[in-house]
Image 1: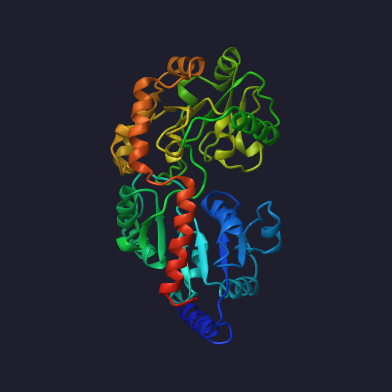
Image 2 (image 1 turned 180 degrees about the vertical axis):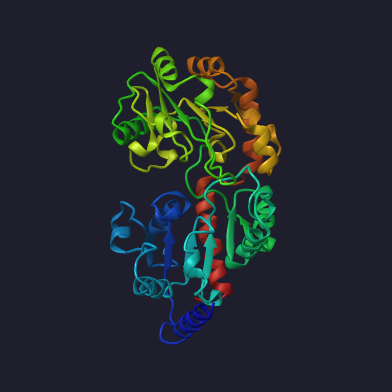
Length: 400
């Protein structure tokens, strides 16, 4: 604790002395990767809005953009020397604006950066259905105290709707005025996909996973992260006795299954099957890049489907542990939101959905209802408003 105070005073003095003239804006992608809201906003301001230039990118790797490769600073690994972390802190000290997508991103460094001298922005990576932060029932009092301080670390937090703004404010103990309805900066579906968008997404999938779709349908399973459980495991997918039987059904129905889940499946399941693909077998790509090629998206309690309510992708929910999940983790919004898709309780339900994956009339109506509640701006509106709000905040803090 004493060393931490000494380091804070050291960087505070540096911040107010020879590195007094701040410049530019540094972006950090979700978990350090070049994906998500920050990447979309980075591309947008590069092309359309130079008010807070120059723009830098930081993280594990740089985006595949010439400007990002030129103005890129790699974040040190945790095990690297203190000197490397000090150098990185000196890099962050230079900027007027720092934007991240998760409260955990750059959190180890923010504690040494005087907040009055910069604008720190959180652009949350997606909508969460589950309770979190200080409202999460599974967290200890100590963990909740940590979360109660998160809201004070950010000058601006982006929300997609008024409903989400109140949820975020309660979750991280943040003044409601600091949570602004800007919208999702990354691409979301506002219409059905064009033929070109579907073909482009198909090519991305085939390149990433070395699997040709041909006339096969694409099914994606993407459950939530069960961070409230230690060493959690699940039964065999969708109630099948084993993956060999599931694979046979996929072949019969001319379908490929892409599994994008956190490590809760047993290791014996992670073997090669002709029509089952585990996402670790390919590069990390945003779901938005392949979504137009997806016929059926299956999840449990993840908010991954929320961005695609306006698309023609059908949703399904395999909620094998919903009673336990509801009890231990809970939901922020009514479970009626799951009416946007079908329920999978048995292998027969899965087979029926794979063979016919067109949205029902009720599912379409429910999707429109929830889309109107959860999203108030289009992507273009969100990109413009976000840049405007951040610029306005830098003026309020007299950084320009």
